[in-house]
Image (cartoon, rainbow, N blue to C red; front, side, top):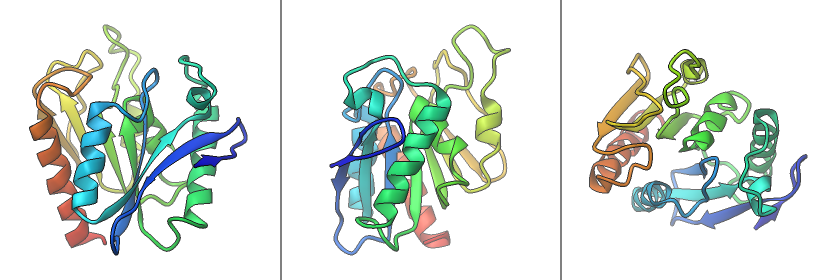
Length: 200
């Protein structure tokens, strides 16, 4: 379904669950889409665990562009989509947000504004490749709710450290998270089960 935002229409792909406990809403990476294998794997696991799922395409992707919009536009569009979904299709359900790479950054920056109860980060880009001095770790550190980061062991975008409230699972592979999807699925499944026990 297409949803209006301050920066053009976004698109949400809704995957309902029978009697859902919560909703998982995921955004895509900067140059990719919602069909990325790690997003699909997370969606499938969440559905198996009784979460409704929405995969969200940012307006620049809906418009056919590959270059991402500025961060403030991404955040504003994401917030608008979640407000719309919470007022209708996902009304009354606790909200777990997240995404891969750029989508994970958006979810972290907006976690407070969207009232997320937890955040799932697939391949969080800690810094640009070869530029550890340009850290984005502050976006991750600012999240006050439980966080799961699934990160490739050889990801050139860096590896965040675990801390209180933030679990980091290192899996084989790089930023694409394609090398060990079984490990990715297991990490997401264990974390969602933990959320159901402790939060939902």
